[in-house]
Length: 191
Image (cartoon, rainbow, N blue to C red; front, side, top):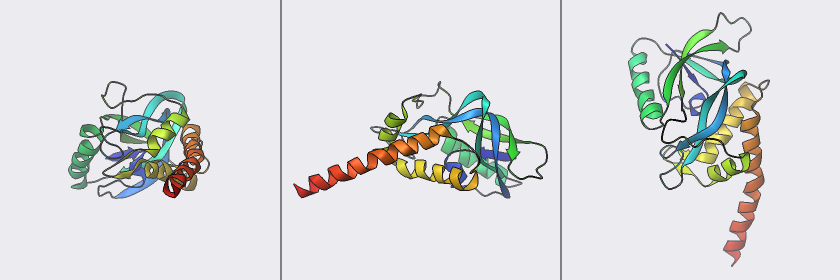
């Protein structure tokens, strides 16, 4: 079984796997449209994490993990709790295209997608509003800023040829807001 990750799974799968490959799936765009009240946020201040939006001309880069034998039930049980029960994600099968030049045919992979029907779905917002929400949110897996920056770093280092305007626009918005917050905190400390 192959499992495709396009959010925190790219750096923190949390399950045992046999191999991993960087690559992409077609027909989807990554969007910070899913709310998170557990891993990267709270009930009072939900964080923003990614989901996939059907988009014919797009592709989303990430990592596919191969799980075999005893790894299969353990990884699926873990991911069901992490992604479906706590996150509100549904599963779909997609065709994963490995990055390697000599890659074989596309691989069928399982992917978790949050749809507008789940109660944590937040939907679209401006990059500035998403960045502002990310700045103030944290949960049991860490601060929402870490989630955004790790995902941007993954794209920069493992998929430098790929474009993800939504992701990098939110990163830019976050970076432009941070100096203002730091200055505000310094002036509060001085008073």
